[in-house]
Length: 287
Ligand code: AMP
Image 1 (tube, protein in one colour):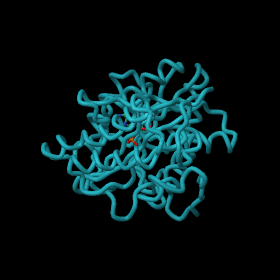
Image 2: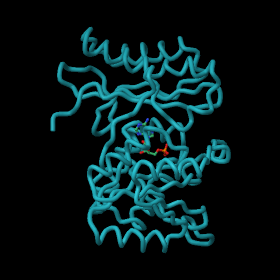
Image 3: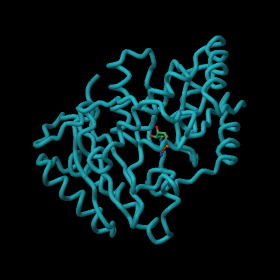
Image 4: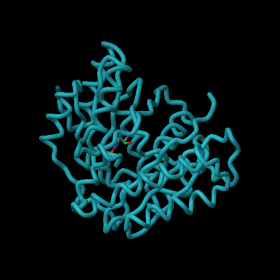
């Protein structure tokens, strides 16, 4: 497995891989866990070779967020990529992705990046779009793997790729969870044991929404959203950023559900200084 730290080396390595077959990219910020490994496995099934990028992207963090303390266990990450069968890893320093003095480009999908994560983290999706656009152009994959764990991010990346007519298939990978249901996340390692116990409240709020919709046939969205917030509150979260039901494709808010209304439940909340997010597709849109 090769490790490239410059754009030019990654470009030439990836050109070789594309000459041999289809290439998949799994973009990550490192501190890898089984969720990331599932992206690599999905890439291996969909293509002949997988390249993983490991880059803690400064432009998607707000000024008071965890950019500086974000975990960077690079040796362990490289060993995990190698045993998962990655062909190569692109692990650039910040100056490679953002050369000093280069005027910044803006890419965004305002219709999908207006609220939820975008409201809680101003500028976040502009940073995500910018780094994903750069990675797509450096690696030029046929397929790119993204986790459904970051549901709004997946929707934004899909829309950007479609609207800018990039010939890349976006592969949505299911959320990998701990045994109790907590979605795996690099940020879970910030949690104390006591917070870890309470963190499950986020997933429970989504299960409660699903049960109200599927088993109890509750139709009023406001009633379900308030029950979601109640469950999160009961687990002692310090603040709730959102707990909401949306259209799975457009992310538009919903008011009254019909028996066949497609719906995804999304929630984000804070335990101390740690921000957790999760979602559950309750009814898929018909294809
Ligand atoms: P991150 O390193 O947190 O930026 O995540 C990199 C990619 O891994 C994103 O596409 C995430 O959605 C995906 N991912 C993170 N956690 C999980 C998980 N628990 N299950 C599946 N995919 C995940």
